[in-house]
Length: 247
Image (cartoon, rainbow, N blue to C red; front, side, top):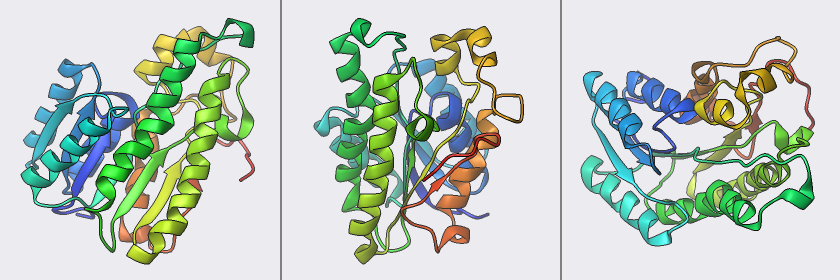
């Protein structure tokens, strides 16, 4: 097992990519701390499945935009598992709008709070517990490179995540902590289905002519979490179905 006895925090692990990453990591031997915002039923199902694989799992409900919650979630994880080895910053949200004039200020602030500010706050809370050999993996998006006409603020946060990843990688190298990101293309997740619906998704299929499954994307996170990627930091993997992007 590539992650035997590793302790992992994954945000947004109650569904979609986060769920797929949590289950794959557990299959590879990791104990998983699930951070979720609202879907308690989904989080419970993931936790039970992880435990059925013979690993430890806990779940914590809260908002990563709250620095106190971030501190408590990290402390709870370390208390339960004895350490923290890997942080997967995956939580995010989006509110599409085809006209910038119709963007609601509340939605813009919610998107930034969830996608990048909360990521920074949780990473700050976790950083002192990480050590040489530890890994931080952030979820960005192909929209950071290609843009998206209906997701102006969302795309902006994903671009910020790329910059945050590269900058933190420079700062973290003295501690021997690797910081990387994954930038999926279109993925069939509850969030994208809720936001666009199947018909809209079909209009933007990548060269492979289908959206990825969360499980197909999860393997990129596994690679970045293991020693197989020992020479990678400040990098972004692109499981996007064949779209050519720069950066």
